[in-house]
Image (cartoon, helix red, strand yellow):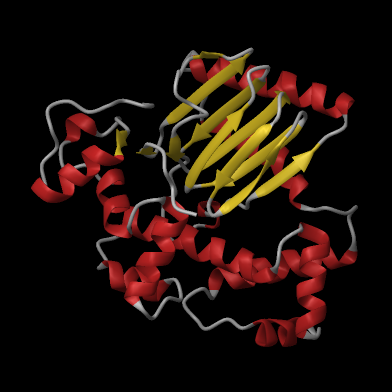
Length: 297
């Protein structure tokens, strides 16, 4: 499924926020209809039903739904009677291998009582972001509050095994990684390891690996001058064409465009987030226009 909406690439340090209540949007009047590309998108639906598209995933939205999506295309739609809170942030990393460069995708449906608590929490975060008081400490608190929902079951010995495995995968992304070899590393069969990952996280192990490779690629594009093909190799993609297709499928833009969008040539626009049509102009002219659409800064 290809992105069909307006794509906006967010700069590191940028924060975008919106509170959508009864069809009226506060703070940013396009959030929820545009496709945005940030580092993390946190969305909570308090009321309303609809659907979303995030990084190649398409699913339904219903009340008391929390979604955390890593950098990539994200778009959603809800019916007219709706209440939704969105915070999209870019948390800069210091190196491509920095573990904080990776944020897992998750979707969680809460009970009404737990949903009420998350509604209040997201309302407060959205208010802080809209007033310019949303800082790195808030980002980390929100991430830490969301991360436990990666796990679909109560704490179990298998979780420690999987967490250790995920950490090992992150350090070996440049290597060929097969389900069979990873299963041998932890003493499981390939089928059992994959089933265990699905049971505890709701996702196949291959999906985790793909997301980690994309996270490493984004960081390398932003922080290094490696040619795009070499970035792909450093993340485990030996075929440059396949890497470019996979990156564009996840992010709505090719790797070179992502790099341009996060590394402006003109310091006047260092804090500005720009839409995809402007990025295409930049790629062509290698110069930033005098005006750029500011989504978040």
